Length: 374
Ligand code: MRU
Image 1: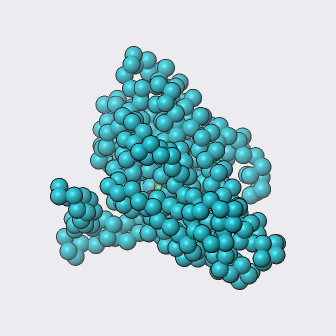
Image 2: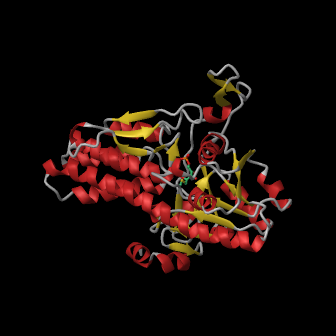
Image 3: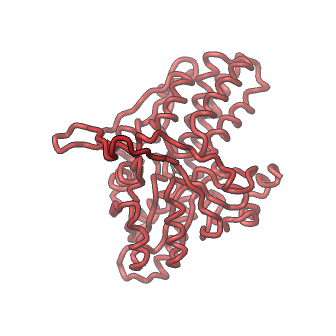
């Protein structure tokens, strides 16, 4: 994606040298500073990568996976022994529990290097991390193409004579959450670029405001018309007929089609169901946990209550400040994700096409992956 005329991915080797795995680190966009400041951060070690994931300098399921993959390569640079590999993998996997892309990427890199001589492991891991990042870009591009078909069909059906198709999204499932393009936002970018009139309702996504801070930033940079709404506004807009479809991303979708995503997604899906609004989930296969049988088994991350009791933003004077919004002494609870039952999902938009959110639907697109887990 382009920021002020320059093309960016969200993660890239800090040096383009062929032997970059020997000395340089990996560079990421510091998402804790957006939307007000665009700065990058360099990760030089496995611990840097684990910290970046924990502190949400990088976030979003696919980007967490790519960062963990590079993090493992950086860990092997310091200690490529079997014990070093196991310790680095364990530290990275523990960084955040919900997005399955993290464990998927760590396992994929581990499997690639485990049988290699110790001296070859770091370079092989670095190459595998780069392959994971490149594959994510292509998968998101394909998701965009498949989702574009849905948007075009809905726009034709709505026959709004030039009026935009109103699409609601929750959290940030754009290019900032992936390596490029995004999942839920990729079809929107492609529709916009193809001249389909679209307008996006952006849920602010309390408590960390990924919608207000990141999705609005992305859409604005691309010129896509959008409006930020409070998290509780979507239901009203659906009742008024002002939402034509919803598209969200996912952090883990399981074998029966249950979808885990940013907390609040479930309520949007319920409202969409009640109002006959199509509710799509866009995700790459790296986000599908074929081994887990039901959404109730997904570990839900519980984050620091301070994310809820405090808010940060830019003052009129241009300084960044954090203020408390909850009375001293009031406890706060901050689960970061929820699970939307498969029955509320109209379809899963994947890199291989669109399918029902069900075991049969997943089998129709990913037979070999489902079979391997059975
Ligand atoms: O806590 P976050 O910001 O990592 O949560 C991100 C989300 O919930 C996204 O919707 C999800 O990862 C899909 S990203 C393509």
